[in-house]
Every structure is written in C-alpha cells, then in structure tokens.
Length: 311
Image 1: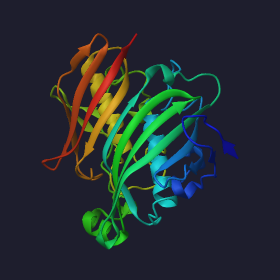
Image 2: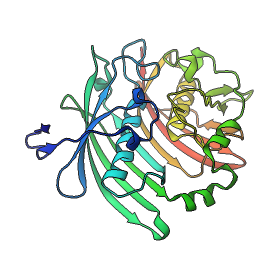
Image 3: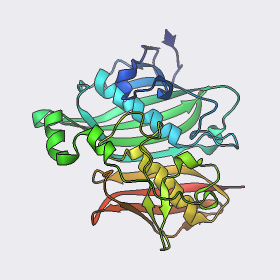
C-alpha cells in the first residue's frame, strides 16, 4: 500500500502495526493502522483510525475528546521506539514531558470512523550507558488532510534491570495493581462535566477548595487494559482536564492543549492529591488552569490545561 501526500511529504510505503508494538492487550483499543519511513532516518508517517463511538473518547454532543489524540500519539511513539529506534519490547517507556495542542473544529465526530495521519520527527535520540535511551519527538497531525494538532513529547526507555532498581518494591505490575487504593466517591457529574461518564471519573471531592484526591479505577479497560505498576500518564491528563473543568464553573469545556511535566511515578497504593490554581481567562471563552499532583509530600506531575468553554 502506498500513500502519496503531494508536496507535504514524500511517498511512503505503509506497513501494518502488530498489536504487541503499541503495548495494548485488547485489540479493540488499538488505534494505529499502519506506518512508513520517509527515508531520512528521523521522520515517519503513522496512520490511525478513530472510532465514531467510544465510551470516553466521544461525547453525547458528538465531539472527540482530545485525549484520543494523546493516546494515538502514545501508541505511535511506542511503536516507533521498537521498530525504528531499536528499543527492545521488554524495556519500559515513560513520558517526561507531553505538550500538545488541537484544532477544536477538527474534533467533530462525524458519521463513521475518521482517518488520522501523524508525521513524526525524532529530533533527539540519546543513547545512555546500560541500555537506557531518551527520545524527543515533534508531531504534526492531520485529519482527512486538514490540520488537527501538533505535539512535542520527551520520553525515556529503561531496560528491566534499571527500571526494577528505580521502582523498587513497586516494580511488579501485577502486585502493584492488586494493592491499588479502594475507589473514593466520584466527583459530581455537574462539577466534573456531564460529558465524562461515571466509569471515567478520576477525582474525589475533598473538603477544601481547588483540591481533590486522585481516583484510580484499575478495572477500567481504557486506562488499564493490562496491569500497570503506576498510574498511567494518560489518566493523569484526564484528571487535569476534570480539575480544570471543575474550576471553570462552565457547563462544558473542551481541552485544547496540555503542557505536562511528569517528575515522579504516581503510585497506586498511596493517595495522590490534585491541586489547581484558580482559573485565568486568557480571552473570552478560553480558560487556562495549572494543575499539579502531590504524593507522599512531593510534586509528581504538573499540567497546564487550556480549554474552550462550550455552550
């Protein structure tokens, strides 16, 4: 199969994507359909198909959740790390920074699935001693040849020996999942946004303003289609989106950008508290919120969320 993209990029021969290369256990959760190299050693095309209906990714108003783009990017970078950059399948990958912006008009969930194209350029691939690697990627995303978004992601890969030493008693994913904290009450749908189903409520209210406890449901097969030894970054982005919405007081918000920094692993067996700086309005209908997570006395992540208020 050959895809021609005119003057934007060279002709690319597309190959299929085996499920094991995107680190998903359930075939239904795989978004990628193919990939190909531009021949320069640094740039690649990755193709994906988005479902027209999904419990989390599409709202009752027929709009794709921006986290669908985040998951598409995660799968694409995971796949390229193995196929192009020689990262073995037993290495553990993790985000350090995740910065992405979307074009809201392109998030309309039209009839039937839609085709998404990612043009990914790895600007840095740093090999470290003992097998670790740090990679930085810049990504341009289109939907049916129209602009959808841009992203810049820095991530790291560790071999098992180094990862196990870093994680200590939390290294085993099955054991860590079994020791996850029990679920607290879900945030009221009016506060978290009625576009977010109960199954995906990731915050519990506290008796303090601008502060919640992270709520992690390890049985949710979108967030946990296999065991994890820590809270996935994808779930932390959703927590930031829900906290930003709760701060806004709007009936509905649509995140348009995430600027995230992940400084520590968020453990499943200890409470993580989500805090936000009260909303700042950049312009009419656009809000910006800084959301941070703290666990065991340390800041573990921060996300600046920009969102559009919707009526």
